[in-house]
Image (cartoon, rainbow, N blue to C red; front, side, top):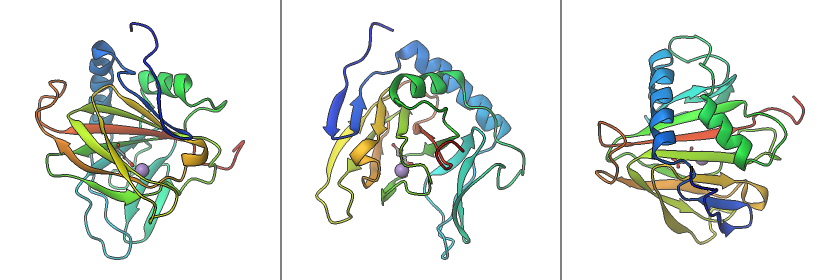
Length: 211
Ligand code: SIN
Ligand code: MN
């Protein structure tokens, strides 16, 4: 890597780091995520109560993984379909946490989202974690996404930025509960993946502080 990438503060605690991963690191992380997906296949999460499928497919790595189905959102130690423990968090993802999270404890969960062209994620807060003292650290691979963010209330005005392959985003401090989502991805904007689409990783602390 050619020195630390510049950090752009979008709002207090919400920090965009364009190009945190250079191309070689993106390729290594892509390959590591392929291994994760081999061990823990992508699944289609469903909305609580209604069971409506998400347009994003997901898997996880780390001690805990985020899942959603008719019974609600939760973290659990095993894959909802294979019932196997999640694979380990790839070293490069862990290194990004160490570089950016400014938190003494390691991530407990790494959610892997796969966006095909047409997939999106509605505005939401990441609030299923008991420990809100740690940020969420996001890494993007593949096609560019239009990322929308607002304040900590649903009514607050929103803005959008583009997250490109290799970019990191830290969602922490006063912005830890900021609403955010993905309006769309821009197919054909990256050559990293063989198919058009985008991988997003979010590294999180889940448990009680010290837990
Ligand atoms: C998420 O909010 O879980 C994912 C955000 C992203 O895909 O950048
Ligand atoms: Mn989120």
